[in-house]
Length: 116
Image 1 (spheres, rainbow, N blue to C red):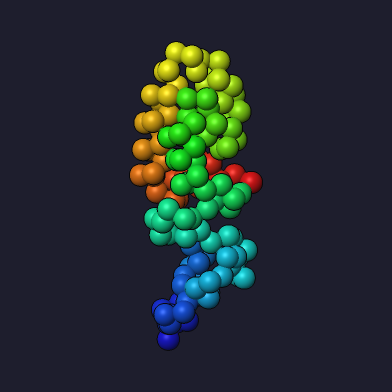
Image 2: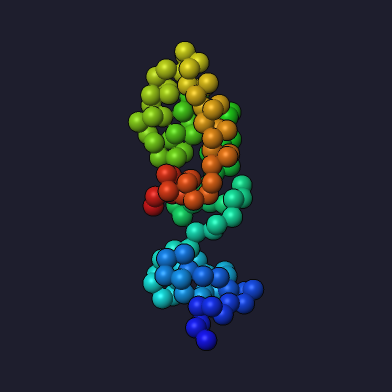
């Protein structure tokens, strides 16, 4: 029988090559691709260490000053938020962004903000 069809509860399939690997493996030993958690949890972090919940909290509480943009590595947007913080428009945008960050899937968050 094919090995890929035989998987125990302590194993998973590689997201890239489909090889059976240990459930806790972060990198596939066959193809070398980093495994991304498919769960949508608030405690998950991107490969570069950025946390979705931290970004959402920064956007909610300090988003009017663009702190969440600096945290996520979008320095230009952070400066733009700082320049217009007196208008309160960045605060409204950041409130919406905090909700979007909380409802965003982990895969989308990692794709957009998880670059090393």
